[in-house]
Image (cartoon, rainbow, N blue to C red; front, side, top):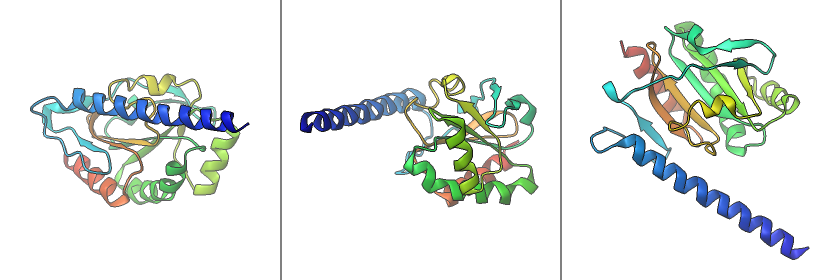
Length: 193
């Protein structure tokens, strides 16, 4: 029995190392040599000017069973958050996301979640518990997240992306977000023309 626990811990540690190595590689690929990037302890990456990344065409079923196409939100600043009810940092940042989504909605900012590797009942309970009122894609199969290959590492949960009104990704946060940082990123994206 002791060997099984040790093997599980070793496997978990190896997964963490693999995710970190992948994130560093992906960061270096996105950064390039002349990209102005701020990579602070929060895992923040900024994409200025022509370094912005076009939002891929994303469409799918939400946790409530509705169809959602992100093209319908063009013209709004968009905050996309990758989460799972099983994720401790996701639970920690959920109240901030709920508050910010309500605070910025009158200005036309839209929030959308991408619920990964979860079941619908647990995800809906998560939303109720934390007061999440914006829609989330039901991405049990990882098909929505796969559209962000090269932008969000597949194991980076939580992750948050800020998209300007033109549909260009301007910021990415890997890991738990700081609400004041996200508030500033939203304000910057609102100012982009």
